[in-house]
Image (tube, rainbow, N blue to C red; front, side, top):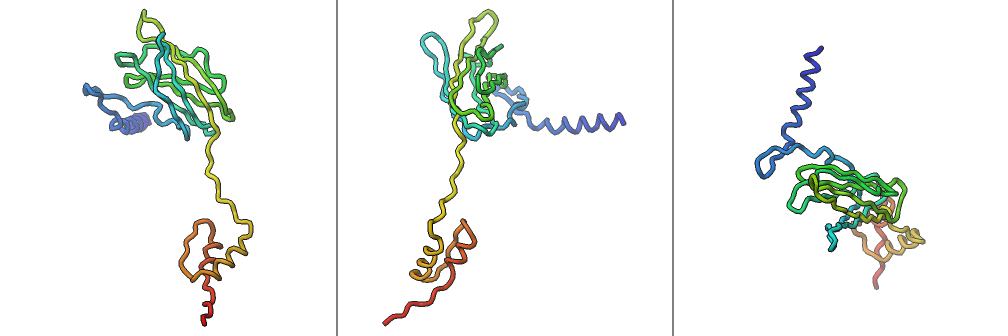
Length: 195
């Protein structure tokens, strides 16, 4: 029994070996543990701006209601991830999640289920021991999810189909909207009499 458990564990871990990548110095980088999180259908993040006081800011637009995250990453001025971080104050209408991966610090925002509107939060970033904290303000706009509108049905479909079959010569018509429309339009109309 114990050999079966050990064998199954080794087999499962063996599948992870090929998923690691190599960094610029040839060091293996483990796969991002959060890469499979659901992403928001729409997520736009502006480049990070830094004002004269050193305070950083970013603007984000994210779609509401699909439970997906909107991520972006930051790094220290000379490169590398921050050694520590926190969220003060946290977003009022969503959730912020921070983590380090591959020499970058990632910030993810997920809006509350039914929320639409403005939100914001501030991330405190600590570059190294005994160095001043950096502030990153994140301004968020949560917009309703865009749903593709179906084509509006015509007011008098029977009349328009009758007119179109009488005036046009028969031809192959391919409509994706309805099989009924396809068959009605592709019927043969009697040929018009000529003098």
